[in-house]
Length: 163
Image 1 (cartoon, rainbow, N blue to C red):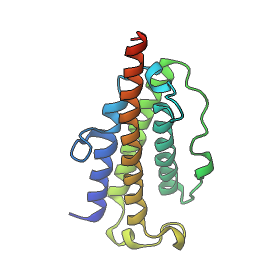
Image 2: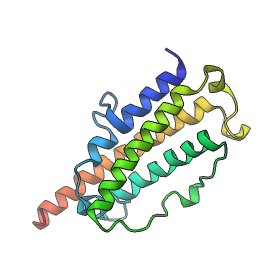
Image 3: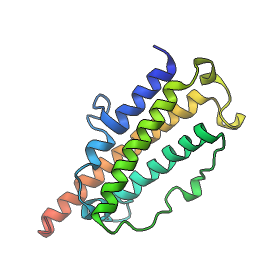
Image 4: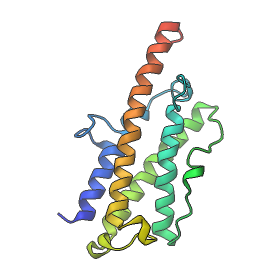
């Protein structure tokens, strides 16, 4: 199996449909989760909505790079989002996140094998392979946070009698 196919499958696993590494994925954790749960701040932790939108920010930015050839995302803006105030906003976000993640995986699959070891944007970033692999690791890192925060928030809601 080519490295781009392996990376695309691993990316789909963490975002869309896998259970092998974490026994869950972003879509399992986010789909059907109500707005109150995803926007509840637990102590000093990020909200689930902010973490999901943070990951989507990078997916969307990399999609833009693959389509247009410019990398316009910046770490300093990766948590800058308008408040999520309505359930339909959250539901629409989940649909968009899912579509953009699938687009990203499809673009990975289309990369020629020889490109995987080429420089990604600038030599300081390393290769395409390294950056795609780092994106997958970044997703798993925040998926773990989402799972824990969701448990904490739901537990707090139960204790307070709000669910």
